[in-house]
Length: 141
Image (cartoon, rainbow, N blue to C red; front, side):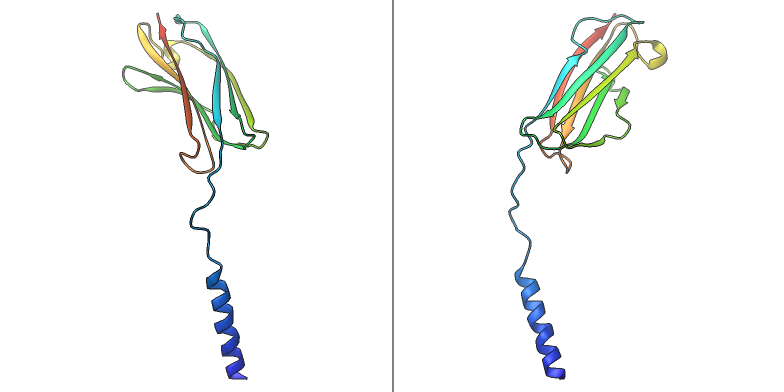
């Protein structure tokens, strides 16, 4: 009986070791794009309301796993806006829309005479998978 149990364990270990993971997993074609509908690159003024509208899309219909919209000062790198709060959106339809408004004011960190970068970023399940970053630069007068 002891030999039969040993034989069973050896057979089971051989079966399990022969079923290893695929060393070359198939890469997913996310074909992501971030369509920045607003804002545009025209000059802005302090006190203006910035309308934000970005459509993140997978042209192959894959899940939008992560999306981020941010605004930072081009001159010193200070980040003034970063949304959504939970960037792990997992939108299975292949389309995720982010809409918001933001007043360009000194209380929000904006200053006249500065240049800003509006950035929309989308990526897959793992950091960097299918990553796409689109930007629009604008000046606050």
